[in-house]
Amino acid sequence: MDSLRGKVALVIGGNSGLGKASAVALAAAGAKVMVAARRVPEGLAVVEELQASGAEAAYFAVDVTDEAQLVAVVAATVARFGRLDCAVNSAGISEDVAPPTEVDGDLFDRTMAVNVRGTLLGMKHQIRQMLAQGGAGSIVNLGSILSHRAAGTGLAYVASKHAVLGITRAAALAHARQGIRVNAVAPTAIAGTQIIDNLLANYPQLMQPYIDAIPMGRPGRVEEVGQVVAFLCSDAASFITGHSLAIDGGQMAR
Image (tube, rainbow, N blue to C red; front, side, top):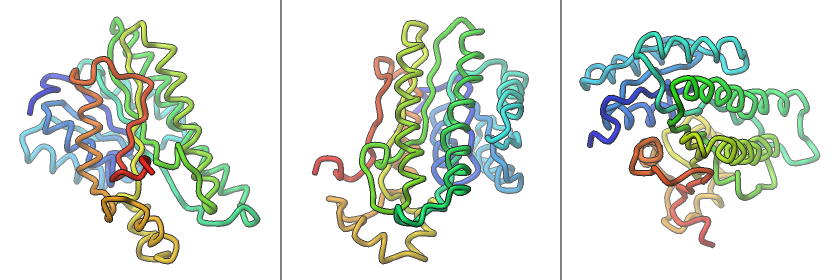
């Protein structure tokens, strides 16, 4: 598959989990990939893996809570590869499993800073670059099935993913006429991600009912999300914007 041959993709949070899977899928589709993430060793390892597969790839260290670094990573992508065609905003945290009566204010602020503010400001500078190139491009934000539903615990995470869906739709409406498409993916529990693997290992009593509620009877796999991200970045999805695509084994059908 070479649906992104010659395109340049920036994957923020591309050092592990869904971000890494997205980088792998984008590279497999022919894109040149800038892997951006906070943890340097893991990011460099992903780049080595992509290069070993024959892809053009580079790494840039970025903390999404620092807007100056989000400016810098876009500039570095353009300096290295000449332009920016696709961006994936995958950086996120989920450290909150508390019920409403136990919500921690500092943890809420941290969750919103990474999951929402980081995505919003990432889009801000990605879109600015796409507009400077004359328009056109695709952005995919990592939402969650909890962008559409709620849970009785982890309210900070639920709030953040509802917000990601809102800013995705708003940006899509703002820039549809310029050919910049903005979508989200909404995965259910996905094995191979730090968040879900931690919950499965340490909070099985919370996760098992959630897995049982998936009609296909299993968690998803990271590559099943990465391939959808690559599709949304490609011209095969040229008339899709403002959409949140559930990757959920049928869960939203209930």
